[in-house]
Structure formats: structure tokens, C-alpha cells
Length: 398
Image 1 (cartoon, rainbow, N blue to C red):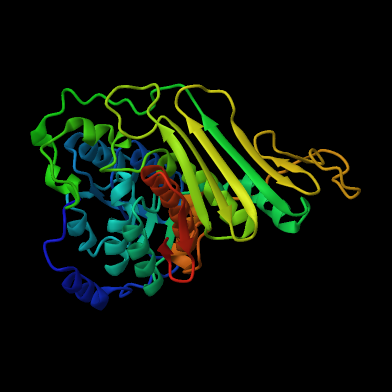
Image 2: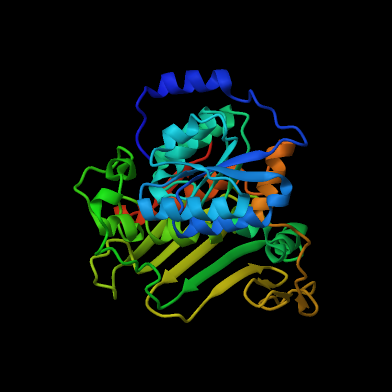
């Protein structure tokens, strides 16, 4: 994951010549490059192995840490019968002609940087959430994808979950009446971020590549392994968790960007050197006149919520039921009804189908940019201690 060794303009111009030069036919194998093969990258390798009957293979592995890289190479060779090429430099991988698409599973801050370079190199992309954690990088990646002809799937997998697909249809049908309030809450009391870092050999890490030209500090094994705790690499709870929930608001209610956000939070329990909040609350107002509240804590596991409150009743996305609860109108929903899942396939399956068909996947670049705007607004509101707005016409934070 090293910075470019040639100018961005030169790289883009060179890529434009070869971009789309290999149009995939029905019998062509889709060759995938994995960029980042830690925990999430390993999960996505498993997903690709599950759908290898779609005539796909993993031809390349990129990771800055040798143990991750070697483990992934061995897994892929066993599953597909061929050893993939390996590198620590994502730009090198993007130059390989035997890579048609890439899967980005790197720390949050690097997602839009690699995505932008990938589509400019003519690669299709599955990029893990969040789409971005700084507005400048997210916007640059969004515009680059819009200029390109590449297929981009963002890793907000609920868009491929049959229960959420059914709930989206129900809300969009108007069965709840006018929705004015949405409440999300996600809470747990586990140190899920803990990863041993004490015995990492600096010689096994391409530290320059990890820093992506955005970080300037000596080798820090804890930043490498527990990057979820530090602002250099993530905006914390908004990017790590809120993106899944706030994506539903834009999807269900067809309102892509919040008008404003206010937030509060801090490190209240885990005094272990972390810099990102362990308790976080945000409130967002949308142009279509509804409020979304998102809360999350890493300090207590009570209070998971997914409620859509309308004038005719409520959809409960934890119990998976729609009812007249909360409404006193004559046309309130008459009786509770369980939500039946829609038939579907996996998020990765959908992406690979779209790579071949050139159709838009379920979580396209607009979905990704929409959730990025919301989580960045909420994180900025916390950092600034004031309301942050968004100009949807100019695509600028206010």
C-alpha cells in the first residue's frame, strides 16, 4: 500500500489507455486482487471461495504485513490451485494486467485513496465500508468513480440481506405513513478491537506503505494492529459502525444526504490510550423532514434499537415486525405483521455478477458516498463541538 511513484496525472493517463481494454466475456475468468488481507480481507477471501463457480479466481495479494500476506497466499493457492502474486504496494498491483477487479479491505482512511487509483487504472472495485472518513478523500473518490466506467460495490452488506431488503420495500411503500423519526442504537461491552502487537517485527512491515503518504510517525505496532483507536486511521464509531445504520436511512427513505448533524461523545471507560470515543451519540436532520438518532457505546450491551416511527405505526428492525405501535390515527396499521425476507444472494456474489454484466450493484458509489457524508458530518460535529451542515448542490460541508 505504498504511495504512487509516478504523478497522479501520469498514472491516470497511462491507465486510461489500458482501461477497459479487456471486456469480460461470458467464459472469461474474473481475476481478483486482494488489497488488505487482515480479518475483513480474510472473510472476503472466504466469500470469493464460496462463489468460485462464477468462474473467478484470486490472482494477486497485497498487504503491508508479511504474516497476513503469506497466510493469504497459502489460502488462495489451496483453494484455487495456483499461487497468486504478492506485494506490499497497491500501486504495483494495480499495474498488473492479470487483475480485473480488486477488493479493498485496508484501514478506513485508505479506502477512498485506493479506490480512486483503482478506477483510474481501469479496475472494478469492491471497497469495504466506510467509503471514506475525510470529506476531501471521499469526494475525490466519488467523482473519480462517476467519471469512470467501472463497477463499484461498497461493503455495506445489509443491502444484500433479505430482511433489510424487505424492510426497505415496506417503508418505501408508504405503509408507515410519514416517517419523522428513526432511532438506531448499537451497544456492546467487549474489547473487540484488541489485537496483540507486542511481538511484531518491524522488518515484517512495510511501514511506508501503511502510512500512504498521510501519516508521518515512527513505526508503531499498535497503530498497525489497533488502528480503530486512532484518528490518523479512522474517525472511530461513525466510520466503523454508524455507516451500516445510516446507510439504511438514505436507502429506505430515498434521501441521500443529511442537512445537518450534531454529536457528543468521548472516552468514558476504556482509558487504554485509545483516542476514538467509546460512547457516541449523533442526531441528523434530513431535507425530507425526519430525524435520525444514532447511539453507540462500547461500555454496556443494553439498548440495541432499529426503529422507524411513522404516522401509521412502527417498523422494528430488531424484532423484524411492523405494527401500529405509536399511532393513534384511524388508519393505523391494524395488527403486527412479521417481516418476511426477500430472496437474495451474497453481497460478493452480486458484485461479481455485475462485473460481468456491467450493471450497477446493490451498494453502488452513490450509496457509499451518501453514508460517507453522513458519518463524516457526525464525526466533524463531534470534533468541532458544533452543528455541521451539508450543501447537496455544491457537495460541500458547511
